[in-house]
Length: 126
Image 1 (cartoon, rainbow, N blue to C red):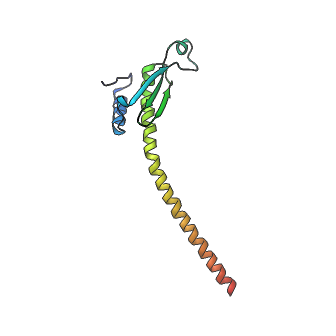
Image 2: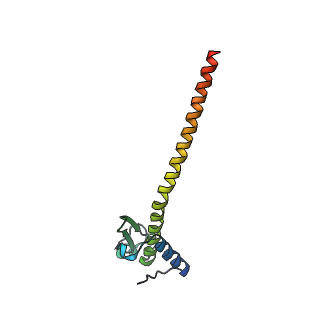
Image 3: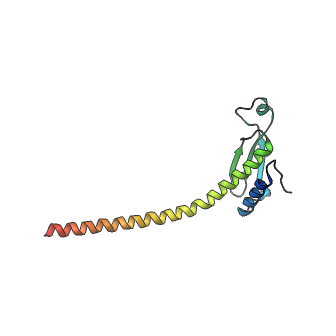
């Protein structure tokens, strides 16, 4: 069953593609609705508009109460989940590249230090 949210077709298509790319399926999501907090008056106190979304394979939890409507919060929670999963996939690659860069910089500094020490020792002999 395809979910329909009150957003533009372009936004729906973008969400669908990012969920496909990250291999997120609706059956992997556990969705619960809770009452939001903060400003909003009676609507906040009476209606469960906040959405709590749990991605079961990764255990990532998202709670969204940005909008006053449940449907928009459902859409936004899925978008936030996609962003968080994409970050968790990208960060290990960046960390790996940063580690290599730090290792090269350390090696270069060590060479400089040894070189300075060598030439300082030669200068003291003369």
